[in-house]
Amino acid sequence: MDRFPPTGDQGIAAEQTNPAIRIYGRRFYKDQTPVEYLAEFLLVFASPKGDQQNGTNSLRLEIGDTPPRYWPDDRVALKLFAFYPSSKLETRHPVHQKAYLQALTDIKARVSGTSEDKDEAVRLLQSLFAGFVGVAKNRTWVTHSFLPASSVLLAREVDWLHSRAVKNANLQDWDAAKQYFATDRHNFMARGGELLFLQLAHLFSYEDHASVDAMRSSASYEHLAQYKLVKLREDIEIELQSILEDAVGPISELASFIEKALGSIRLYESSKPASLGWVPTASVPEAFLFASELNNICRSTLGALEKIDLLQTLSCMQVLRSLCFQASRVDGSNNSTDGFGGGYSWIVADANAQSGSPVRKLAQSSFERIEEMLFRVLRQVSDEKTQKFNEADKHGFQIFRKIAKELGLVIPRTGRGQRFVLHPHLLRFLVAALIEPGERVRLTEFYRRVFAHYGIALGDQQLLVAMLWSSSETGTKDYAVAADTSWVEEALQQGGFLVELSDAVSIVHNPGSKE
Image (cartoon, rainbow, N blue to C red):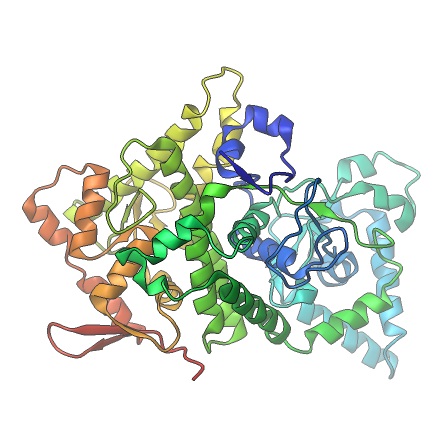
């Protein structure tokens, strides 16, 4: 399998024992949360890139003889100010407490007014930035993540090596503590967002790809025929930059104020680079679908925070799609899915479908079929007894179930009968991602696009293809029940996306037009 970039950080030792990295790239990992997929993707996009540290707010990469790099900020001072008071007690080192108290003093010194005014200003600022927490969980303050609502809230992963630090009885000041902050662990910002960025960077590294030409000339993807890669990239770059600048407006000035006041709280005198991994070059088709959906969401008239919410869903759906696309390529056992280039399918049911109903059984069987494929390919790439399949599962097989459940695409979260469903938020996402802002399409066309992009079978024809792929042994009666999509139409109607022109014709529209 060819790779992009060929000089990417390949982590040779890990690849030799981990089939998932060899199949999917470097890397997906089960502990990365949905918000951190988007945050890491936007971090690479917004950061300077290359040895010359240019390429800010860009989806392009300079490829040389060494692994490509980007230069992310760590935002340690801002995290200390915002997250330290509510962070995990067990990992608060006395040096952190000392730095935090000094930080409050330094900020108050820059605020005019009485002592009460200064205290109130600090409380308001802390509440503001703490309110933008994306992930906290049971982590220490420096490993918290901000919601990626602004470029000033994008930060690289930094880990605190607490067990090592507490063994140093002489550790008394911030400068001495710097050695216990690590930026190379990739535990939470685990490279999944980097991988999504690299998919787009590879897509846009040429003016065209043969696989993109084939898709644009296919009847299944005629709605993408107008996209030219150069223009698509430029549009996405402009829109993403606009979102990061406009989502929360003046917060960038407040963040700059805090970081300037806390200039002594830093890890490095200048930015420290981070290396980028690689993606399979075969990922161009799913990257093209990803780019078109990204463009539709960014161009809508939705509020910036609403767009960020949808982009988070898109990032997770792209991870699921990438896993299945690549697994299908490697598996190659039964990858005929007319109308969809992924070579797999997801059959979804109404979340409220009764136990034992045919459509619910189909959705359960579909999920089992996907998991079987994801599990099987990890064992197919090598038969060496030294393979660490437990680690491989964490980088591939287990991720699909985890993210699908977090999205609500698979229910229940625990217990038997796990199956694909499509709840209203995911339907809203599919409308925003697959229909251009202001565009109106027939319901049957919407079903066609949903299948063409994700392999999600809703309409009659798509269900038949999906059932053939899943090798479901169901009769005509079962198929007739499975083809009942009234629950989808009802959900679209409740969301304001469906207009019924007649008993036979329904229109799905994306209301988010800028015109």
